[in-house]
Image 1 (cartoon, rainbow, N blue to C red):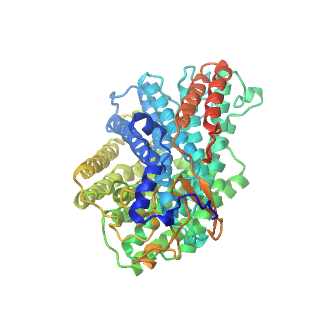
Image 2 (cartoon, one colour; image 1 turned 90 degrees about the horizontal axis):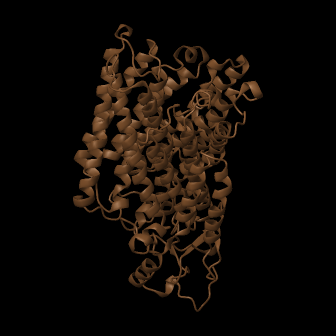
Length: 635
C-alpha cells in the first residue's frame, strides 16, 4: 500500500482526530440536494428498506381486500375487473417490489460492514439502482390509481396478455415495471459480487466470510443469470404489442409456451433469490442467540451453492400440465425433489447448533424458530407438487397458493422479521421493544397458519385459484372465512411491528455498539455506524472475529485521511493489494435514472420514444463518467 509521503494518512492521527477527519470526508452533504446526491451505502440501504416495506404495506392492503371479497360466497365487494387488477397488483408488488428488493436492501446496508470496508463497490451505480427501483414502483402504482393497473396476473401469461385479449396499456405497464425492477436488481447484484470478492478486510479468507455474505453472494449470481430471462420475455411482449412482432403468436412461427419457459426459467430461481438471503439471516441470528458458531459452516455454504445450481433445473415443474414429454417431466420431478436435500442439510445444521448451544430466546430467535416450522411444511408440500400425478390434480388450485405462501412467507418473511429485530439496533442505535416483539411473533405465527393452512384443504376439495367469487353450493365458505380471519390477524402483527418501530425510533432504549454480543464485523463499529463505517480497517484472523479478539480487534493502517479511499484485497486470501479512490456524491445517478424512466415509459406508447429518449440518457451518462480532473474514480 504505497502512498505519497506528503499525503495525510490515518496512522498519523489519534483516534478522535481520525474519526472527525474521516467523518468530514465521507459524510453526505447537507440539504435536499445533498440527500439526492448521496452515495453512502447505508443511506441508500435505508432508503431501499423503507421503500420496500412501504410496498409491502400497499401489497398487504390489497391482500386484505381480496380476503374480504373471498370471505363468503357470491360477494360483490369487488367487481371482477377490480379483483383482477388487485390480484395482479398484489402479486407483482410482493414479488418484484418487496421480496427481492428488501433482501438486496439489507445486503446493500450490511455486506460492506460485514466484510470490513468503507463503502460498497460502485456506489454511484448503487444510488442509480435505488432510483430505478423507486421510479418503477411509482410507475406501477400510479398506473393502478389511474385505472391502468395491470390485470393479467403477476405472471402475465400469453395469449391473455397479448394485444388481442388485453387491448389497453395494462399489460404494457406490467411488462415495463419488470424492466425497471430487474435493472435495479442486476445493478445491486454486480455491486455485491465485486464488494465480496475485492473489498473484504485483510485476512477475511473465503472460509471466514459471514454466512449472510455467502448467501447474498450466491443470490447475486442467481440474479445475474436468471433475471435477463424475464427481461427478454417482457421486452418481447412489449414488442409484440407495440410493433406487431410475433414472438408468442403460434400462427406466425412463435409459440405461447415460449413465454412460460422464459418466465419460469426466471420465476423458479427467483423463489431462491428470495429464500437464500433468508437462510443467511437465519444463520447469523442463530449463531448469536445460540452463543456458539453455526455447526456445519462448510456444509451450509456448499448447500447454498448447490441450491443455486439446482434452482435452474426446476422451472418446468410449473408446466407439468402443458403436455410435456414424460421423460422431461420425470427429469424435472427428480430435480425438484433433489433440491430438498441441501435445504434439509441447512435445517439439520441449525437444529444441531441450537442443541449444542445455550439458546437465549429473544424475539429474533423466535422468528427463526417460526421460520423452521413453517418452511418445513412448505417444503413437504413442495415435494408433493413436484410429483406429476399430484401436481396434475392440484395444479391451479388453492393448494398451490398455500404451498407458495408457506415457502415464501415462511422462507423469507419470518427470517426478515427476525432480521428487523436483530439489526434494528445497528441501523438506528435503539432497541425495539422485546415484549411487543413477542406479541408480534405470536400474532404473525398464529395468523399466518390460520390464514394459509386451510388453503391446502380448499385446494384438495377443488377450489381453483384466481377466482373472484364462488357459489354457496361449493362448500368453501367456512374455510375461506377462517382464512380471511387469519389474514387479518397476520396483518395486525405488521401493524404492531410498525408501531414498535415508530415508538422505538423516538423512545427506544439506547443499543450500544454490540447489544447482542454478536461475532461479526458490523458490530465492531458504533450503532448507527459513522459515514466511513470504520476509523481503521479491521484485520480478520478468525471466522468470528469479535468473539476471538474480544479485547482489541487488530487493524490495518495506511489509508488516506484526505480523500475517500477503500482497500482492495485479493480474492481468495484477502491480502491487501492497492488503495482505491471511492467516488464522491453526485447528482448524475438521479438524473440518469430520470432520463431512463422517461425512455422506458415512453417506449410502451410509441417506438419513437426509443429515438428521442436516447440523447437524454447519453447526456446524463456522459455527465456521470466525465473526468473531473481529480483522483476519484467515476463509478
